[in-house]
Length: 284
Image 1 (spheres, one colour):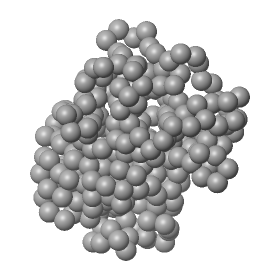
Image 2 (spheres, rainbow, N blue to C red; image 1 turned 90 degrees about the vertical axis):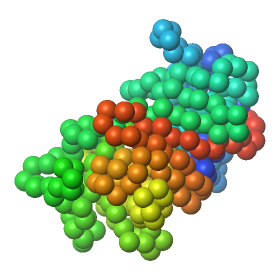
Image 3 (cartoon, rainbow, N blue to C red; image 1 turned 90 degrees about the horizontal axis):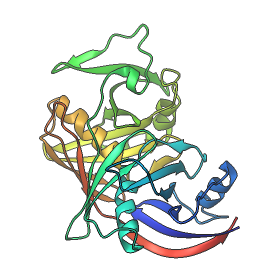
């Protein structure tokens, strides 16, 4: 079949976006992997499928697939920002505030006058079962009442903060993100037996109370240039641990995101860029 697509990115985290609003788009795992392949396909971290919805008060539904493994995943902050630009550029809506549903969540997305997009990412969750994470036999450290869990991985013992942003994150603080062992420790944390559904591993360097540097090894994809939910998880963990203020700029290899979280049960807000790269079609 000949499949039209749009290539997009948010701070270097790149996507193939497909329009399922006019006709259903049903892809096999192999076809998703072909789209994501950077040598034999289009190349993308994730594949986004835009769909209509019958849910009252919701404008669209979208599905998110890992471009490497072909698995459907729960959440993608950078993809959500690209989603808004896509539906506006393709005439599917002229709204500046769009509400969408994913496989396990509803998000409110706000188009800004400068072309950036703010995403209401929902409230974070901290209980280990939300990731899930097996705590059997472990005793966490406590910083300001927030748990840091010991984890043996890649020959090291590290302390990780656990945050669910609709998808699972383990965040650890490092002295220098440039020299952090992301390539070795990231996969070891991702596939650790205590994370039964695997986990995204974030490596955070605190630059000031309003700025961090971050690298993320994403579940099923490896290190990416940016990770929106990872940026949210890192800031939330930093706020809970007393290291960060309520608004933080997150520097990643692909660009900068601004994350806001006042604490408590409040939703996390993420603001950042979303860009269209090109339109095309591929035979699958």
